[in-house]
Every structure is written in C-alpha cells, then in structure tokens.
Amino acid sequence: MIDLRGATAAWQRADVMVRDLPLAVLLAAAPWIAPLQGQGTQLGDVPHRPLDALALLPVALQALPLAVRRRWPAAALALVAAGFAIDQLSGFQTAAGIALPIVLVSAGAHLSHHRRAVAVVASAGFVALAVALDLEGAGDAPSDYAVFYLALVAAWGVGVWLRQSRAAEAERRHHLAQTTRLTERTRIARDLHDVVTHHVTAMVVQAEAARYLTAQPDRLDQALAAVSDTGRRAISDLRHVLDLLDPETLGPERSPAGRDLRELVEQTRRSGQAVEHVEEGTPRETPGSAELAAYRVVQEGLTNALKHARGSRTTVHVRYGTDAVVVEVGTDGTDASGGSGGHAPGAAASPPGDGRGLAGLKERVGVLGGEVSAGHDEDGGAFVLRARIPLDGAT
Image (tube, rainbow, N blue to C red; front, side, top):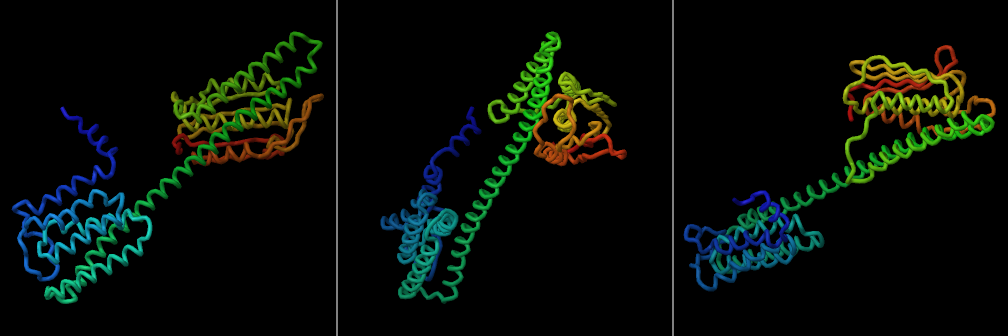
C-alpha cells in the first residue's frame, strides 16, 4: 500500500526543478495530442501551419524552460518569449503557448533583481513581435494587441502580488518569532529574579543569624541546616527555570500547589521571620497559571519582608474562590515595597530593592487579567501586597 503522506513529504523535499519538470513535459507533449492540436493561442491572423518537425523548436522553447522558471526566472522568460514569437510567426500556434502567462506569473513572483529592466525588455519584445506580425499581414487592429498585452501584464501582476504576499508573510513570521523570543526571555528573566532574590535573601538572613549563635551549638546547627536546605531548594528551582532554555526538556510550566506554598512559608520562618499563614477555600486539583502567579506574589512579599522588615510580624492570607485567587501579604512596621526599613538588632542591612519584583508581578498578573497593588493599610501601619488573579485568565 502506497504511503501517500510519506510520498507527499518526499516530493516537497525534492529540488524545485524536479517539481517543475512534470508541467514542462506535459506542455511539451500537449501539441501532439490529437484533441489539443489547433487549440493554441493565436495572435494576429497568420495562416495556420500543420505540425511538422520544425514545430519541435518553438514547442521545446516554450515548454521546457518551465522546469527552471523558479530557479532562473529571467532566463526562462526569455526562452519562452522567443519560442512564443517563433510559434506565432511560423503559424504553428500550438497549445504550448499557454506557457507564456505561466512563466510571467513565475517571473513576477520569483525574480529578485532587475525586475524593472526585465519588464521593459519584455514589453519591447512584445512590441517587436506585434510589428513583425503586422509586416506578415496579420491584419489585427492595435487594440487587439493592446488587449493581449494587458492580459500578459495581468499575469505579471499576479506574480508580483504573490511575491509581496510571501514577503509580508515572512516578515510577519519573523516579527512573531522575535516577539515570542522576547516574551520567553522576559518570562525566564522574571523567574530567575524571583528564585534568586528570594532564596539568596533567605540564605543571607540565615547566615547573618548564624554569626550570633557560635555560643549555642544546637541553634547554630539548625541555622546552618536551614542555609543548606535553602541552597538545595534554590538549586532545584534554578534547574527548573534553566530547563525552559532546553528545547528537549521544554514542557508545561510547573505550577506550585498548596504544599509548595506552605513549604515557602516554612522556609521563611526558618530564616527568623514570624509568618502567620492562613488559607481559605480549596485549591484546584490541577494547579494552573493563577496558582503559579499566587505563589510568586507570596514569594515576592516574603522576600521583601526578609529584606526590609526583618523580624517583623508578617501575614500571608490566600483565599481560593470559584473565579479567582486572592493573595495578601502584610508586614508590620515598615515599608516592605523595596525601600529601606527596620531590621532586627545586630543584623546587617540588606541591599536596596530595584523594583523589578513588583513590576514583574504586575506584568505576570496583568497577563492573566488580574490586579496587583502595594501600599500601607488604612492605619498607615502594615505594608500590604495584594493581588487578585482570575482562574480563567489567559495562560
């Protein structure tokens, strides 16, 4: 049984001349097929001449160059035009004359250089043919030649339109590819920022705390274990982000479930931050983009709390609704948006934020149709990061 799909794929992979050859052979044979004899294009009123051995020349000149019409469009046009002129002047007027509009379409579509010069030379050649036919006593009116010329111009115009359409489609695909690459780079950079900033901040805080526990071996061992655990989690998350750069491992973006969110809170507690975690509702069995965005909101809020409100009471409130996930991360007593704030006694100050985290959150949540806000509550005390993320937003 013939594999049509495999045969089609093999044919599409073949050289363009091989794919164009069947049409050339078909047109070369057409004038010799009995029903098609005398059915060719007739320009002027030159007496018809029956086919003979001399007809092989104009037929071959018109038909065979179609095999190279896409690779060498100018040469193919010149040969076909010469064959057409001989065909008309000799009176054979064969069915191979249909090759002229075909090669004009191909020339308009595939000719990449000197298009204007080719059009001028082709037009001059047509005028010369019209004059020669008139000298032969063809007897056609100038308007007849003009109508035929306009038909040839229309064929050329179809080819030009095809070329422009193909170029526009290529430009659209190129622009789409660039936009896709930029979007992926932005997403990966955002994830790297979230992962690195949170884990490194936690490790710095844990390491700073360990400096003051040298006289308490048990607590020092716990602090160093927390640093080690945070480092391993950072490596795991970084591997996941870097896997996005490998086409062989590219797959659906991992969406943290509730367990991961609780692990994130627990990790922050081990860094010395007093975190109160409250969840309402039930998360979906299969987490999606909304859950991932909620995870990143909590991660950013806890990171800012560690950096700019170290030791202050922090609350994480996640509410799973039927249509959206609502997240609130509040920190008492300071500005946890990225500016300077209070720190635990004896702890070194964290580096100031660059604002990328909050900007990235707004972009991530905004894509899903949600909203992010950050600021002090009505009493002017706690700094609260809020986000509402629709469950049916875009992915």
